[in-house]
Amino acid sequence: MEPQKLQNILIVCLIFGYALMEWVSRRYKDTVTANGNDTKLELLMFLSLLAIAQPIALLVTGKLCAWLIPDMRGAWANWPVWAMLGLLLVGDDLTQYLWHRASHTPLLWPLHRAHHSAEYMSIRVTYRNNFLYYMLMPGLWIAGVFVYLGFGMTYAAYIVVKIAVILGAHCAWRWDEPLYKIRALRPVMWVLERTISTPATHWAHHAITNDDGIGHYKGNFGNLMFIWDVLLGTAHITRKFPAKVGLIDDRLFGQERWYHQMFYPFFQSRREHTALKFGGRPYDDSQAPTSTVTST
Image (cartoon, rainbow, N blue to C red; front, side, top):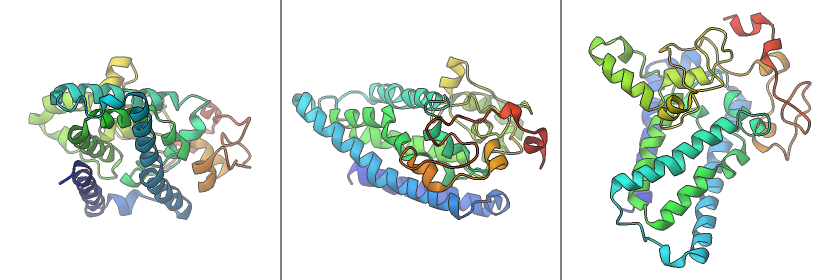
């Protein structure tokens, strides 16, 4: 079976597996409060990533590589797996960490705020972003170069593992929570939560506030590897989960429309306070009423 087909089959299995656990654990029914606006944004963004952004990145990088380095097609196919994985972790995952971190600056925030505007955590939130967020993501284009160089099967396996971790970090079913309570697993969990993204660390990144000592939306940027946060000083580990996730400005001024979130700057918001228009800016949550972030 071709690596791409096997990769896709495994990814579909992962999605259905996590969805099943969200349902069986009742976490989806009890915590996911999505409305039609959320559903349109999440479904259309997921489909556009699969059908447009990723294929374009792979096609364009393939064409450019064939033009610029024609003799290098498949040239690294015989590299040892550990060397390929090392390059993928740096070229794809580390650059995605840096891109994610940069997207929390005022310039790039409009391309990423959609991801944080969900007031719930679930696998459906995983690829909820602005369309340009993925089109401009360096790792997506770098990965295309690696595929051209011959990383085929290794890249397919790497992507499956990465998506398993990312889906798990967003999942409404908090798989790590019961494991923290098992005494024999404490050393394992200590290493694991500093190596990969887990629900506890990633939910903290989606928290509506940092004031409770749990939320850390200005850190915990890791996608597959949380070790980047540990090494670069942006990690915050508590093994606890924030009471609320989402954005304060949405609670104060109302939810942004799905097409403003997905297609900014082509469609711009008319909301009273918004980052989704030229001249707009991220909301200064230090000015928010205390009740907005502490009430349950």
